[in-house]
Length: 372
Ligand SMILES: Cc1ncc(COP(=O)(O)O)c(C=O)c1O
Image 1 (cartoon, rainbow, N blue to C red):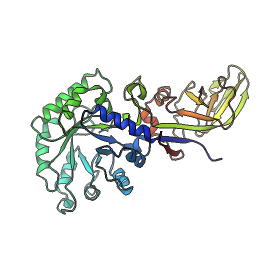
Image 2 (image 1 turned 135 degrees about the horizontal axis):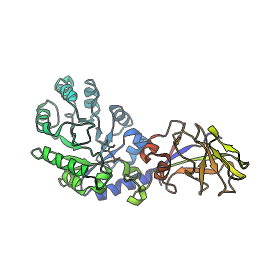
Image 3 (image 1 turned 60 degrees about the vertical axis):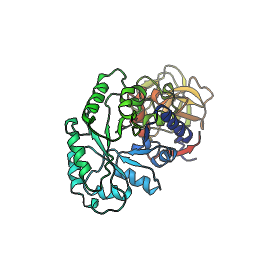
Image 4 (image 1 turned 45 degrees about the horizontal axis):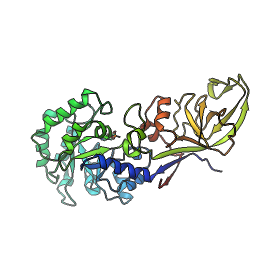
C-alpha cells in the first residue's frame, strides 16, 4: 500500500463558492485569485473550476506561463507585474495583464522594445496605489501623473485599471480600511477607468470599499480565500460566512498500540500518558505540510470520530490519543481537516491561519479531485 496522505479538492465547492461570490458582487467583475498554486489547491485545477471568473490573479509570470501552457485562455493578471525588463516580451506573448506598482517598472515600460512590435493586443495594465499597506504601489499623490504617462506609452491599453490592496479589511471596525478607501477615492477622482479595491474581506465587510469600485459597471473584486471556503475573518470558519471548504486532507492509521501510564510519546518525550491508553500513529507529518506547531489537543477525525494529537508532530507521522475511539485500527481513515473539521480550527491550534496550512502542502501529498 502506498502512502495514503491525500488532499482531495472539491471542484463543486470551488464552483459554488465562485457563484456565491458572484451573488454578493452586485455586478462587479470577479478576479479569482489563484496565486500560490491556487492557495495550495492546484493552479490549473482551480483555474478550470473557475472558468466563469472574469479573470484569474496570479503572483508571478511563471504562473501565467503555466496556465497558458495548460491551454487556459482566460484573462490573467500578474499581481506583482514584471520582475525584470525582459519579462515584458513574455507578458505580451502570453497576453497577460501586468500590475504596475513601482518606478522601476515604469522605466522598463518606457524602454520596452517589444512594445513597438505590434503583435497581439496592447499590454493591459493595472495601476497599483499604495493607500496605506506600504507594501506594493505608488504614492497616491503621484497617481495622476503616472496614469497620464502610462496612457501615453506605445502599445499599452489605455483602459488602465486602478487598484489598491487593504491591510486590515478582515477587521470590520478597523479605521485603516476606511482611510485607505478615502485616499484611493481622492487620488483617483479625476481618472477614468475600472476600479479594483476589495479582496474577500473587503467584499464581505466593506460596502463602502466595494461601492468605490463596483458602483461602476466595470468594477472588480479580487477574491481568494472565499473561493476556497476559507474564513477571512478571525474567529470564524468559512461555513459561518456561507462558504464551503474546497480541500479535505486525510491519511490512514498505520499503527495502534497500548502504551502504559507514565510512558512518554514522541520526540523530546513531551507528552506523558495519564493512564494506560491506546495510541494511534497516522501517516502524515510536517514533511507533508501538516503544521509542526500543532499543539497536543489539536483535533483529528478517526473514521469520523473526534480524537486529538498528542506529542510532537514529526516529519512523517502524528501520534493520536485514541481513548475516545477504542475501535480504531490500522487502515482507518484519519481526517486532518475538511468540512467536518474546519482547517481554521487546526490553524488556531497551530498558531497560524488557514491560508498558511492549505498553501503549505508539499509534493509528497497525493492530490485528487472530486465533484463534491
Ligand atoms: C493584490 C491581492 N488582491 C487580492 C488578494 C486576495 O485576497 P483574499 O484571499 O483575502 O481574498 C490578494 C491575496 O493576498 C492580493 O495579494
